Image (cartoon, rainbow, N blue to C red; front, side):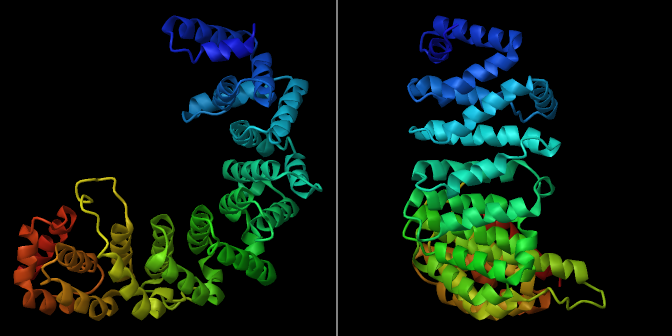
Amino acid sequence: MDITQVLIAAQSPDANLRTVAEGNLTQFQEQNFPNFLLSLSIELSNDEKPPESRRLAGIILKNSLDAKDSAKKELLTQQWVSVDPSIKLKIKELLLVTLGSSVHDARHTSSQVIAKVASIEIARREWQDLVAKLLGNMTSAGAPAPLKQATLEALGYVCEEISPQDLEQDQVNAVLTAVVQGMNQTELSPEVRLAAVKALYNALDFAESNFANEMERNYIMKVVCDTAVSKEVEIRQAAFECLVAIASTYYSHLEPFMETIFYLTANAVKGDEEPVALQAVEFWSAICDEEIALQDEYEGSEDGNSAIHFRFIEKALPLLVPLLLETLLKQEEDQDQDDNAWNISMSGGTCLGLISRTVGDAVVPLVMPFVETNITKPDWHCREAATFAFGSILEGPSVGKLAPLVQAGLDFLLNTMNDANSQTVLRPPISGFVLLLMKH
């Protein structure tokens, strides 16, 4: 069987050709699974083969190793485990070679397939030299940028697929060293730096011991913060995604870095591209989630003021709330019609709601002047922002704190529910709050 021609025919617009080719592939897979995988690996690794056949070979390889359905996934795992070790070794060698391909799609697919194999083997204490081989690509003299990019992608995907307990600490240290070096500004290739930041994101769960070490923690945080002001939008976005993950995973280690992070997030929210600004707001939402969880955990206990509760939101409140209020003025014309829309205005309002739950009454005097200033303006953006701001702080502050303000402005709240431009999402909480007041 000419696997190249069969793979191309399987993508033919001619339904008859396609059906025959798909049948041939299925028959090959069922009759000789090991050689089926080997043939696909050879196809993927060969730069002289057509891009279409290589692309499909990679997709089929991935789908032959993993599935969303747990029963199917277990079946595929057992099929791979039962393949002759010499054939598995050849397949893995071909996958590693493909990381150096001149074709981006082949490199990218290979990095994903490597991770799928690793997800099966590393937990079984097999393919123990994978990390070392990948790191060898990063440290070899004159390694081309495409190879380093694909290798970092593979490291990131491997970390995503396996568990922290699957790697020894010295392996984790080596991975983090390679990843952080790849993020450094001395790395001239933006593609390599982006792959490195994304790899760090996936490796953060493995870095518990490294974050517990002050010197290592300081170095990692410095590189992440430096990367958050890179020239490239995608790299800045990925760096802020790392900061969000760090906020959720390593909250207890963040205090020395919060001043720098506030500066970075404020600048991003005020003037960066929306994908970056969204992640900057998400950082503060993640901090809120952590502090709400801490408050719930220690509520009513003698240790109510836990040493690890740094009250970052409370400390940043006077600067953070005005920053978020400004985002509410950046609505998009059709955002209330699109249930899947997510923009800086919605993100800012969501974060404001989390802040309200975190600090309670303290948020009210910071928000109400904005509400009072904007609610009567002729521009619907301003009225909408005022309504959104008020709706965002209905959960958290006490009824006693909000009641006088609502009663004083009951007319505007009722008008808001009839305003054609008002977001439908805000009407239920406001109407519910008005009813609550009427009962008191």
